[in-house]
Image (tube, rainbow, N blue to C red; front, side, top):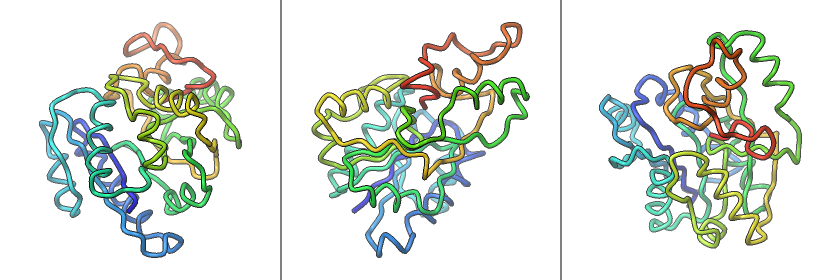
Length: 236
């Protein structure tokens, strides 16, 4: 079985498109009918995110962490107990391509780190878009890490110790742990996901903070970012 984990905090507006895309990816013919289980981890939600998931027949679990690392870990553990051999992770404000899972599996690697594309730059402007594209590498063997586009085998996940309970950069830490144990990691730009560039981002220290850091000082929003422009560029 393949498992997909989607952490969410008050994402009723965007999670519908996310789930529609994930379901399509789960039915890709290259998977040859392999069962796919999707779980949405509702982290301290006070809106209708859970109702949207339920209406689409998607399993959800309620937690009150406000901690994305812990939320991802809870979802992963539930899927591992159900027999998942591969774990894929994305975010509730992200749309994956139809071959997202198929591409991850066909690499035959321990883990696959993919890239992200931004849905709209309207909230940031041309200057930020230009700066972002100048720094971001849409190439094979990039070193970008995104919890919104990450997959790995159950064995690699367990051997690396799983997601640490971090409020940010939990994805960067997991990949560092994978590298520590010598896991075979593929860094690919062939299966990009499309993620939101909204300015009311949910996670301090993540992708939204990175975009905010590219804005002129007088328009900077959000917490002071701590993201390096190399290995963890745009993590989230």
